[in-house]
Length: 412
Image (cartoon, rainbow, N blue to C red):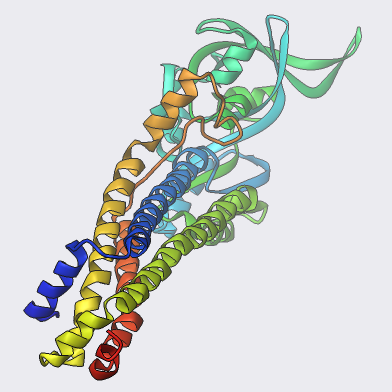
C-alpha cells in the first residue's frame, strides 16, 4: 500500500521531535481519544450484551416463552402436549401448568405470591429453575405431599428454612358456620431457588395436582407451556399451537409480558453505541487537525522533497503514514483495554459494590453487572476505527501534495 520510502520518511516524521510541541500534543490527544473511545465502546456494548443474555436466560428462562391456556381444565393434557410438540419443529419442549395467586404467611409475615402448579419431570425441560436451586430439589413436588419451592428473597423475608411450614392463603372465600373465611393450606418448604430478585420474590412452585385441589378443580392442567428454539418465533408458535388444539385454548407469549423490557435494552444498546461512536469520530477529527498543522509546519521539508523529485503521490503517502500510525496505535491500545475491561468489569464493580456496601444493581432484574464480550462487536468497532483513522488522513495528505516548492522556498 505504501512505498518503502514513504513508509521510512513517514515513520521518521512520527518519531522526530517537532519544533511545534502543540502539534505533538494534539497528536497525543488524538491517540488517547481514539484509545478511550474504542475501549469504552467495547466495554459498554459488552455490558449491554450481558443484560441481553441475562434477559433471555434468566427472565425468559422462567417466564413462559409461549403458552396456550384454557377456560376449562384440560384433563388429557399429555396427548395435546405431544401433538403440539410433534407438529411444530420450533417447539423444543412442553410442560403443563396451573397458575393461581395468593398470599404466603409465616412467622407473622405476609407476602403476595404467584404460585405455579407444575409437573417436575416436564418443568425441567422448559424452565431453568432446576439449574438454580440453592437447596432442595423440585423433584420433591409430588402430588399429595403439599410441598412448595420458593425464591431466596421470599424465604428470607418470611424467615423460613428448609422443612418449615408456610401457609398459602387464596383470595377465594369459603362459607362456613362461622361465616365467610378465606381458603388456606399449609405447605412444607422443600426447595429454595435463586434466579433474579424479581423472580425470587414473586414466584412459587407446588405440585400441579395439589394446585388443582386448592382451586377445587379436577386433575389436569390449565394450560401448556412451550419452550422454543428461537424465542422470537414465540407469537407464531403460540398461534399455531392454539390452532391445532381445542377451540377453548388461547395463545400468549413473552412479547406481551416482557417485550417492552427487551425492546428497551435493544434501543438502549443502539443509542449508547451511537453516542460512544461519536467519541471515535471526534478523535478522527483530531487526527485531521494535527495533520493539517503538521503539514503547515513541514512546508519547507515538503518543498525540498519535491525539489529532489518526490512525486505528489509519495508526499501524500508520507503524511498518510503518520495518520495511520496514530490510528493503529490508538485502535490497538483501545481494543486491548476494552477487551480487558469487558472481561473484568463484572468482578471490578462487584468488588466495589461489596467493599463499600453499595446497592448499585438493586433497580435491575439481576443483582450484578453482566458482561458478554462478542468477537463480532470487537471486529466491527476495530474495523470502523481503522477506517475512520485512514479517511482522516486523506485531506491533510492531499493538501501536502499540492504545496508548490518554488513558492514555499521563496519565503524560507
